Length: 430
Image 1: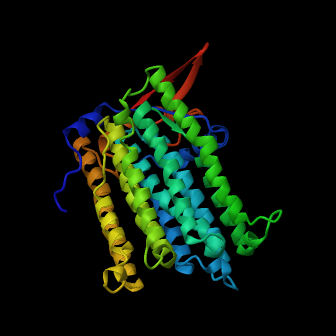
Image 2: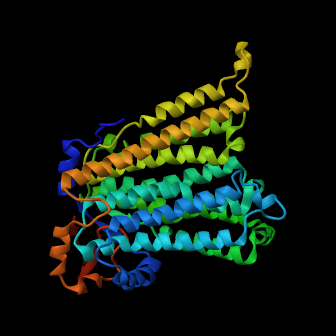
Image 3: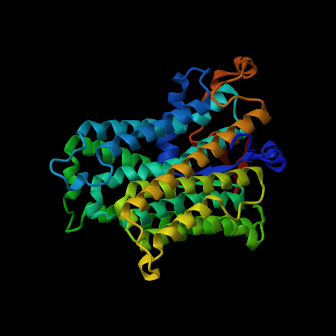
């Protein structure tokens, strides 16, 4: 794959014109987290690149994924006595996740302090966030285990997480504005506190019933209902308002639904495999199945982010869906009805491993390729601040780090100002 280029001239010109536009109205974010992040970022040296903070936080979520997975690969720990996951693992995972959340919150503030704001920062931040959408929910699955949350239901919980994350970017593709969802901050706090409590009180507390209902069911219902109440209707309204007021991209219907097609294809193909596998692969290898679907999702989402930021046409299909569809077909065919020997469980496992490895390598290559091409185009380095930026920043006031609480937690931010009955948006150019 050496030499593959993912960005064309239209992408690069679009990035040059790009301006980040967002609205953050979360009570927790505005009144608690931003004041905290504004205070904390002052202690970070100015030579630390913002993307290094972003990537460090992401690596902490990866550490959690492998650490918990080491003790509970098949999500059986909750039904095992004694529970094989040590308490210190949950405490460390809680700390790691909160630190990752904090680093994700201050990377944009560090970018402004160092004068290194740019489109690469947002793309890098949101791209890694799309991969974290795969990693973070899996932590919680080990709290409940496959006995209370069967692997097929885990699959649908993951699809719900993918949908909630993806729709925010599809919304921005149509409106030009990133409306930061309220749920993000509450989820990060909730998962961190849940894992911390588990480390202190023990995982057995999640097997206790609340008014005759298992906590697992409450968790599952809350995820679905929160999306239907706090996310999807607001996204639909924001898109409708952008067409009504002619403030968005005003894409025709065919172009507007274009980003949804590859996501819908992923949902359908992966669910067909999960439901009709001859060896019940989702029960046999739930973690690896989630890695596969989540990696393809992240690739689809990253490509939408590129299209949205460069104001180019969204992809109608994703090449990784071809291999997923091929593997699904191989694994659901009733070979015995054709007079052929059935596909054995071990062979389907090997196929799943190979496919997960393939899509992971392809996705990592895509991600580093995009970053490399943007760095070359803008003549910057991803993890290092150029000397010219340091020199320019030396003459700026230290007061620039003190930003208002309405600024969002991404690489570039803006704040709403109210003038009479009108709301004006002050955009920070990338």
